[in-house]
Length: 236
Image (cartoon, rainbow, N blue to C red; front, side, top):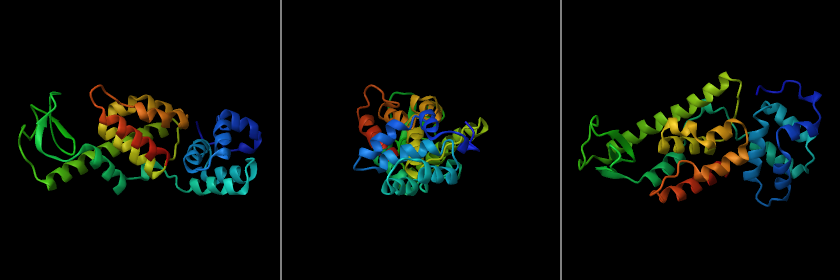
């Protein structure tokens, strides 16, 4: 969907209905901690409005008190074009926390050798053998390489969407979450996930909930805690 150029020709009710904003606005008004819901509202608005249009719509056309309008406007300025973003130090630390450092290479019987912070290579092509010990410095170097590849994959996704006139701005924590998911699942599986497809169609509230079950596999109970943390990152 391209940005709405002349949104004044549409009634407030029609815009709210088309964007499915009313349930979020109702929840926002009643909520004590409004930040998470404000991001879902703002993300929805920025899918069809420029920043200036969204601010004007909030300030002049939403039936909210001044305090609630201020929260939404402040939230808008936390959103950026994902093509200009890089993973934050907090995002990298999150990946480290869940991948856990393993200096001795091991085999999960998935046809790959894994070492460091979840760095995996096919056994037949890997530079590392099972049982080999690497330095922490090398582990960090491999992590940087893998994180950069995941971030590039996320950006490539948004670039492809832009070609189809799908423009979505996100927060730093949302970008960090997506890179973590792509790192953990692989970029291809990440892009095919229900979370991404729902997010692409701008149902941001449902997409956020889907993070909790994205890429979960039998025998990997630790992923449940990781996904719950990533959900909190995405909406916090």
